[in-house]
Image 1: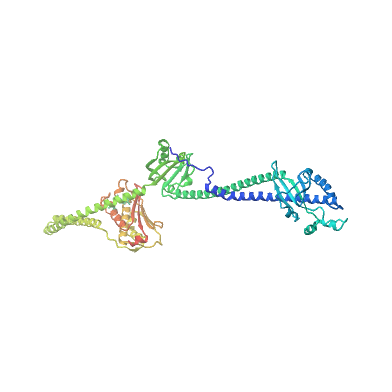
Image 2: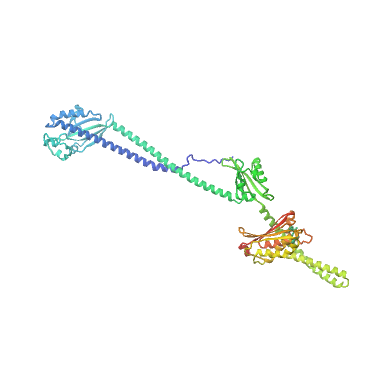
Amino acid sequence: MKNKVTKRHWIGIPPWIIIGAVLILVPIFVFMTLENIHRQNENTTTLMVEKGAALIRSFEAGARTGMMGMMGMRGGSFRLQKLLMETAQQPDIMYLIVTDSEGTILAHDDPAKIGKNYGKGLDLERVSSSKEVEWRQVSNPDGADTFEVFRRFSPTGRPFRRHHGKMMPNVSRQPPKDLHVDADDEAQLIFVGLDMEPVEIARKEDARHTVVMALILLLIGFAGIVSLFLAQAYRSTRTSLSRVKAFSDNLVENMPIGLLATGRDGRIASFNQTAESVLQLSSQQVLWKRPREVLPRPMWDLIARLKTERRIIVKEIDCPVMAKKTISIEAIASFLEDEGGEFLGHVILFRDLSEIRHLKREVERSQRLASIGKLAAGIAHEIRNPLSSIKGFATYFKERYRDVPEDQETAEIMIQEVERLNRVIGQLLEFARPMSIKKKPASLGALVQDSMKMIEGDAHRKGINVHVKSVSDMEEVSIDADRMKQVFLNVYLNALEAMESGGTLSVELHRDDAASNIEIAISDTGTGIKEEDLPHIFDPYFTTKSSGTGLGLAIVHKIIESHGGTVRVQSQHDTGTTVTIIIPCSREASVL
Ligand code: ADP
Ligand code: MG
């Protein structure tokens, strides 16, 4: 069992992305949060200071009204104490203290503390010499801290001294310098203690809120980065997937081997170009059909065998294509499975063996011809010498028996037979000798026509129709014209001999630009060749005719071979024969 299930991250994000996002986002949000909290604290402080200052101002205003027209502090201090206690009733005020410049408490919301000293640790001198509001935070062991606002206390303004009985509303515009220039104006200080508890609570609440918001924003930012990354990863995966798919589609479609695949439902799901040309079926004809309905029997037999045998099958099969033709195919049939070993269908890879078999036969034939040729040449040589002696003696006897006509005739027959034998041996020797070819540019079309003229008379006498279809503008190719004429004549003569009772001889020239070949197909409607004779027709001395030499096609083969071409013979017994001569017309071939 295959165990190919690959381990996958549930989310598919590389750790460096997460680390990077954290490294960037966390400092930003920490900084922002701290900044926020700091600003909130500052705001609170400002608010508290303002609150304290307002309180002091209103207290001063109250004190001023109460002291109007009064001289000295003795009489005013009681009123001040009362006003102070009343003011200190306000909920947020922890305490309210008025001291002199040395810190001795002049008025306190807790009357028991009057006369005691306050303001330890403060530079009271400095505070009393300025009109600025100052603040500090006084820690309180029992509870929340106290926010203390303090400044110089000036209930009596200079304006009131100078212009008795007249109230100047714009006290605040009095320059502070004037206030302490006066020697008898004894400086006083006022301290307001504000309860920080509600502020602290609000501040904590704010801080918590800020942190929570920051965390939420952090999460959103993080999610944003991650989703951006995922979107990007998804997009790149999709594009690379579609690229891979396009590539594999092209691969399947263009591979030089036939591919046929069925899906899970048993219908044909893939059928590539090579499969189309081997089986002579178009993909529209077969796609999404059942193999049994459209494929030749040996093919769907293979699929059926796969189902029962459950193993890869390699087999050579003879497959009928079109109506009559049968081709041999080498097929490999197998299962299609996915990574997890789940069944997806069947696949058959196949290739046409006809071409290979043909080439094999061609090679065998060439080898056989070569060895027969050598043997024949040796024998012919041995026979030739005695033949000339025999001929000499026969001539002698012919002279000698001049008076006896019968004997003279016998001698004459001997001479003729020897000559015939000599001719045959000459032919054989010529066949066996390496053929000399003199190539010159010539038009094959013209050669076909010329050689046809030589047999036209014979053809008419036998009642044979001659039909030549050649391409007029065919370029000249480099060939040995005399030898080629010999080729055409030999083939035409065979065709005429096969059509004793009439028929049609047709010649067709065709230029195959893709393969840079010229094909000459010579067809007759004669007796045809028996299947068992077909492998031997190119052998020298193979003949089925009483007066045949059996050298015609052997010579044809030899000439075409030395032109770098091929000869193919297709024949159906009692129907006719087609001899196809293929001559290369590429530049390289014509130089040869
Ligand atoms: P020959 O013509 O002297 O017999 P060939 O080499 O030309 O020798 O032909 C060999 C044999 O091939 C012939 O005897 C004949 O049986 C067969 N043959 C060749 N061409 C044809 C044809 N067009 N139709 C029928 N048989 C043919
Ligand atoms: Mg012949």
